[in-house]
Length: 250
Image: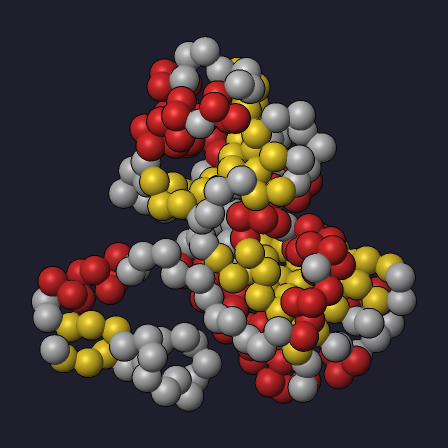
């Protein structure tokens, strides 16, 4: 099976292609728009593979949570490719992919993305399995989670990964002085390669219908619009495949 995976949820735009038992991978740091790099990287990944895009069976993309803009760039690109190539769209949970390389760590792993407004989208993992749901919390609430849980409080070392790892570790240092906080050295990297591994471990994802992006809260644009009496209607028909319908006055 030929599977292309796209990750635009981090500082690095990453793309991976699995075909014929081989994996082709490329990533580039993006200080501006991920969209400017994405299709160039996709082209570079295909060149050494020897296959045409029409041979793709599936395109994987981060479902979220994460950067509202970054996620939508990857999702829209993946959906357009699937429509043009008649391939399956596979939506993969971002926090799980970020935590996947840390499955061998002996202790809790916090997979965290910066959610702005002094908050984090995160989940706690242990031995590769998620121990919490997807959370939208402050650093103080994360610290309280480890204090209140008998299972989590027993550990002295905590590994933090995801693109919000450095910021969260900085905030937790004073809140959890009795814990040793370890920062994943690859927290800034894209996870397109891990997406292939996650899909391989969860092949049922290949048969699921498009689940769309995971929105934990309204975007800043939506919050600002709501203050002005304008709202986004998520459930209306969306002919552009972007996940949001036109604005409506309420």
